[in-house]
View 1 (cartoon, rainbow over the protein chains, first blue to last red):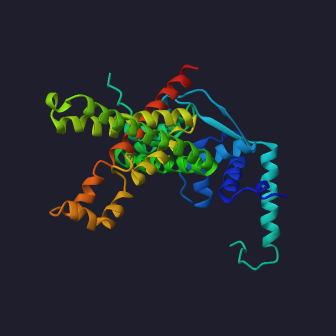
View 2 (view 1 turned 135 degrees about the vertical axis):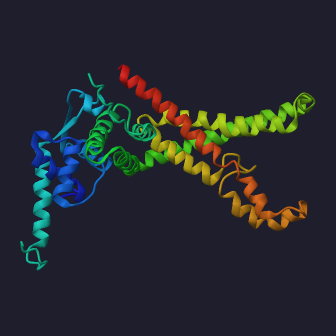
View 3 (view 1 turned 60 degrees about the vertical axis):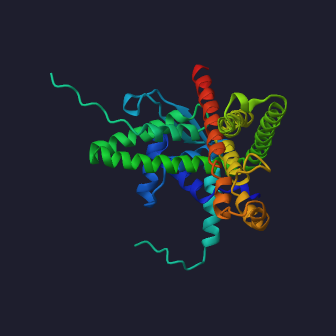
Length: 110
Length: 228
């Protein structure tokens, strides 16, 4: 299995945010979801750069919605994980879990 | 009826920066997302806080998008930037050659003051017109990656200069300092450091010209994408 079959750390975070948001996943929502769940401050640019990369790999699909006035007449771009993307998330998650298994990392839930 | 308060607008210069750093046709949703959050912050915390947030987000976003392009196509960007740099050097040398021929064939200095002529060919043509054209050409060669190529070309221009061996470029500074003895021999009263700084004082103009040329090309591409 090649290294490219696994997602990078931020790619995995973005994919999980997409899966959580389902059909409400656009730039602002993804950014807020990541900040809310991880406490990590991310820029819209970082989210879009990652989503573009994931779309090139075929892990994500996007569509444009109608423009709205509160966005200065610009449309939202909604993203959705593909089946290939979900498989990549599972593979990466399994690899991380496999590596962490048996290690005492103090991960017990509070 | 009370007039409806106008919605605050995000800073135009930062909007322009973000739209330049995105690929043609892809700026809309990103600018829309930024505008949506800007409006929400302005409503909650006021215009000043919203503007501060927008500036920080726009700078980070522009850098992230640029870095992402460099990561995904570093060789392609480097190749086009190098080719465009050669084009820029060639055009500057061509101006040098034509100017030399003109000075040889015609008594130019009887019609125009020498310093004015120098401003015309060395500053206007070599430091502004040639870099703007090179930036535009680089944008044309780069396809959709206009600004990453222009930024790379600008960086090379800052370091190497655009008129080898005549001057310009940060690389020229240590060369002049290393040749201090030889320069002192010809210019005994010259302050070497000031001489070195004067050699690179126009070094910022060509990189700026390259960015302007590429931005013009990027604007033309956006216009074409909008029409299509």
